[in-house]
Amino acid sequence: MSVVADGTLAVVLDGAAAPRSVAVVTGLLALLAVLVSSVPEHLDTAVHEGGHAFAAFLAGRRVGGVWVESDGSGLTYSFGRRRGVGLFATRAAGYVFPSLIGVCSARLLAAGKVTAVLILAVVALAALLLVMRNGFGELVVLSVGASLVLAGRYAPGWVQLWYAYLLTWVLLFSGPRSVLVLHRARRRGAVGSDADKLAESTHLPALFWVLAFAAFSLWCALKGTVLLLA
Image 1 (cartoon, rainbow, N blue to C red):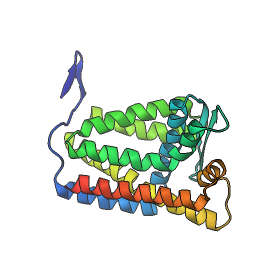
Image 2: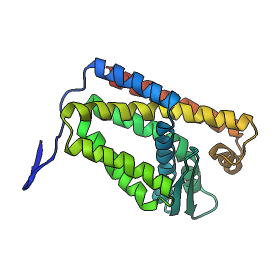
Image 3: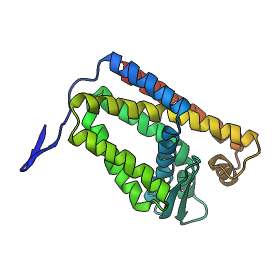
Image 4: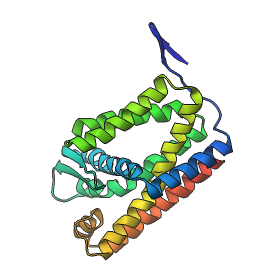
């Protein structure tokens, strides 16, 4: 437990991983939510666009803004060189980021670092809020961020535990689902996706990048499952 002068700042959970029953139940709940609810889709879009923005920042590009729409679509606008590794990394990061964050979170949970997952999520969402440019996107980020803060500040330890596991499972499952949505959209004739943009800059077919995103997200989901259920 972390304490400040005027009382408790947060209940800190740091120890063994959760019982397997918690991992199984939260996994099933997350899978159900990803399949039937739009809330995980909006979170996935926010993390997806956050991945574009983060990669652009690391590549030295200027991030103009991030948009998350109610229909599940999103946009990240950045300024910089019109070719090169920085632009490639920016375009590739979107479909990679949710799965990557999910597997990293699973590794922390496997080590018993429950509160660390929630704190890092709050920090990431705060950074994303700085570049969010539309009201719905701000609502998504603020809602998730506020729930994380409330869980860490006021909720008992078991709530933190369940929330951290649920959030991690949602990210792990959202990755493959979003790639499947991308594939279906392209089959219906949609253009301008991240895969199409990568095809333009690398001269590899867009289908190659769809398959690469699928392989990476499935690997992360499998690796995360092994970590959470171990």
